[in-house]
Structure formats: C-alpha cells, structure tokens
Amino acid sequence: MNETAVVKAQPSGGADFRDVATAHTPFRTGRLVLWVILALVVANFAWIVAHNENFGWPVVARYFFDPTVISGLYVSLGLTVIAMILGIVLGLAVAIARMSSDRLAKSFASLFIWFFRGTPLLVQLIFWYNMSTLFPQLSITIPFGPTLASWDTNSVITPMAAAIVGLALNEAAYMAEIIRGGLLSVDRGQTETAEAFGMTKARALWRIIIPQAMRSIVPPTGNQLISMIKATSLVSVIAMADLLYSVQSIYNRTFEIIPMLLVAVIWYLLITSILNVGQSYVEAYYGRSDRRNGEAAKPAAATDEASH
Amino acid sequence: MTAVHNARPLVQARNVHKSFDQLEVLKGIDLNVMPGEVVAILGPSGSGKSTLLRCINHLEAIHKGYIEVDGEQIGYRVRNNRLEKLSSSGIARQRRKIGMVFQQFNLYPHMTVLQNIIEAPVGVHKENRKDAIENARRLLDRVGLSEKTDSFPRQLSGGQQQRVAIARALAIKPKLMLFDEPTSALDPELVGEVLATMRDLASEGLTMIVVTHEISFAREAADRVVFMDGGHLIEMGKPEDVIGNPQHPRTQAFLSRFL
Image (tube, rainbow over the protein chains, first blue to last red):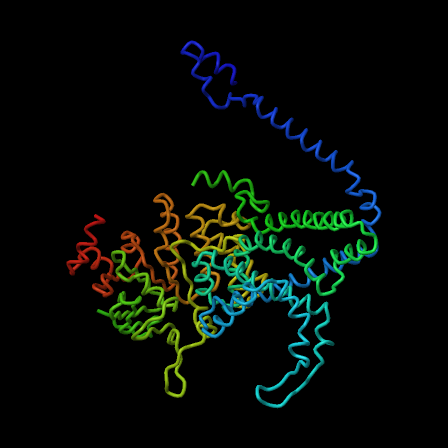
C-alpha cells in the first residue's frame, strides 16, 4: 500500500517521503562507541574488584549464610517490618490529627512531629535504651493521684523494646507528613461528594480519600522503608544483634573487617532490590484506574469514546 | 409569589444569609419547594445560586435564617427548647435523603462505574449488596450506559460521566435531587444527553432543584424558575412568565444575552 503511494507521488516531487510512517531511526555511531567504552570500564572495574585479594571474596562466600549473619538478618527484617507497620499506623493517626479542625489534636500532632523529626534517631534510640536512668519506675497513675500499676523500667524497656519504640516513633513522624501530603493531594471535591452522600468522615477517609491518596503516598513510603532497613543498623549501638551487629561480632573475632562488611552490604542491597520490585507492583495496583484501557474495560470503550 | 398548596413544602428556606469572610453571598433568601416540583435557579455567575444549593444539604453552613428539608432543620436540632448544632454524623444522616450532582461530576476515580453507584447504597444505607447491584444495573440502563458497568470514570466522556453521576445520586433513592450546574463542564455536543436524562427524571415526579445556565431546559422542564442576582432572589414564577416575560430589569438584561 505504501509503495504504491510512494510511486504515485514520485512525479510531483516525492512528497510522500515526508510521510512520517516511512521514517526510520538513523544509526547513531557515537552512542554505540560510548556504550562500548562504558561497558569496558565497568567490566574492567568488576574484574579488578573480583581479583583484588583485599576484598576477601572467599571469606565473603564462607560467611554469607553463616547462622550468626542469618539471625542478624532476621532481626533487621523483623525490626523493619514491625517498626514500619507501627510507624504507618501511628503516622496516619498523627496526619489525621494534624489536619483536623480540633485545636488540641492539631497542636499535639505538630508537637509530636516537631520533636521526633527534629532530633537524631541515634540519640532517640540511646534515650529509649537508657530510659531507666531517667525513670527507674514506670507507673500508671491518675495525675497527682494514686498509682494504679508500676513496673521496673529495665524489665519493660528491653533493647528490643527500645529499638522498636525508637524506630517506630521516629518513623511515625515522617510518615505523618507523607500521609498528610497524600491526603491533601486528593481533589477537595471528592471529600465533598462523600459528605454529600451522607458518609461519615471515617468512611469517606477509608473508602474514598485514602485509596486515591495512596498514589502519592506509596513512592515516598518505599523510600522510607528502604531508609528504615538501613536505619535498623543504628540499633547495633544499643546491643541489638541486627545484621550489622552480627557481622561486627564476627570481624571482632577474625579481624576480616572488609569482607564481613561486604556480607552486610550485599544483604542490604539484596533486600532493597526486592523491595523495589514490590514497590513497583504496589504502584501499578494503585494506578490501575489511570490506564485508559484497564483490564476491566472492554475494547469497545475506546472506539465508543472517540465517537462521542 | 409563593403558590398556595395544601401539601407541606419539601424544602423551606427562610431568610437565609451566608457570607464568606467579609463577602455576603446570600442576603436573605426565601424559597419553598413542593414535593414533585422542579425548580430551576438561573442567574449570572457570582449571584449565589450554587451557594444556595450547597446550603440546602449543608455543604455550606448558613449564618442566619433556617433551612428545612422534609420537616427536618438542616444542620441543627432542637433540644430542651434550644437550637444546637448537629454533630457531623447527625448531618451525615440528614444528607442521606438528598442526592447531589456536581458540575465536575466528582465520580470516584478509583472505582468502576458499578462500584461508584453502589458505594453509598451498600456502605451508607446498608442495602443488600445484591439488590444494590441489581438496582445499579437498572439505573445504568435508564441513563443509557448499561455497557459501561465495569469501566473506570476516566474511560468515559464527560457526558457519560455525568450520566453515571446522576445514576449514582438516584441509587440512594433520594427525596430531593440537587443539580449544581450539571452541564457547565461539558462540551456543547455532550450537553444534550445529560439534559435528556434530567428531563426524564423531571417528568417522573422527582423533586429537583437545578442550578443551570441552560435557559431552554429551564423553560421546558422546570415547574418554576427562580432568578437570582447579587445574593437576592429577584424574580420567581412559571417559566413562561420569568423567561418569556421577565419583569425585573436585571432578569431582562440577563436573559437578553441568551436570545
């Protein structure tokens, strides 16, 4: 079909050569050269690293699945999951409080965010860990009244508890701002519509606003999750046997510092890579209504639309 | 001006005032709407007509006067002989018998057409899911979109979206329907399909208050036309009187632009 058109057009000056349907992409030599050079540099660097004995690759391989390392990995992952879930739940509550018209809730939420974002996580963790020096006893009392129950602080705030509380509260402060940003990104008309249909505020939030806010909440939350995995390495200072702590405990014995750190680095990279894949699936899920011809739509929808 | 009826008005607005900060947008509105009546509110932009509509289901709170729908004062209740503000859940309950259609459609973009329609019946009115779906299909059929059940709003044209929005509002079996410039965001060639749907509803005896710029719709489908300007209700009466033979100079000036 194209050919006949071209032939026909020839006498009048070959105008059909300008039909973009016949266009092709020119071969870009410079680009290919650049690619080859880059590939050579990367391959050479990889070869150097692989053959540098100082990296101690055999040691890396030997300790990669060492029981100490694996149990440290479990601690890191467990801490990440628990602290992240608590952080998201609490962060949602703080975000809603901050957006409410209630002065008390609003100022309490602002104070919370101000404090936990404004101080270093490492310091917060050390404070939680050393809570017993500040408050030797934890009690439930009526303000200025009788004590209802009391515990020894050290028996409540174990290193595990200090790590979870410290990470979760810090995370909640950041998640609160992320969630608030997401909620604000949803068209005001959606809240209004939900209200006009007699939905309670909670239902409107849960069914209408949050699902739409997820699209802008998920990417930064993925960021937070990856930060969190690395932030768990801070708990090694309060004697929690996480991934970093466990490789440290091994190299304190064997002095193979670099290879053991490489073990940790590779594990951290592996986990974050898996999370990246997971995140893109979650994003695709919350973006499904955006694809014009989603799986739910019949092909007829597209043609029908054009006719309107 | 108000016609004498034996029946009690479904909507009663008395001396309604509303301001945004310093700006007074409603300056004492009195309006009765009888059951089954179709009232079209006309007026230049900024005349307060959309605000009045939004006050009727308390999307905006009024500052003076009162509004009553189906015998209940909107947004308030009387307790111990004193008037007190309703809680947000109390207001939510009052809104459940009022359907609303918005200028920008406001369909829930993350839900399919069917999910959009059954959301309030199932979630708010606690209707049986099966019945709600059946009813939704019937409504979609009525607005001529039965093949769009599983589409997402973004896959529909503006006119189709607005017809879904009408079906969604009808799904709660409202006693009163509010239309806030339902055709203003539509391309001219899509206006007709929405107006046709609304004309059907009007002829079936649904009580409707329609804020619109569609003079021809007001003339053909409305029982009564209200003309607003500058926060006042300036002229009110049968369409043939208000549109055909306007008395007030501002009504005349406004209508002359459409002829």
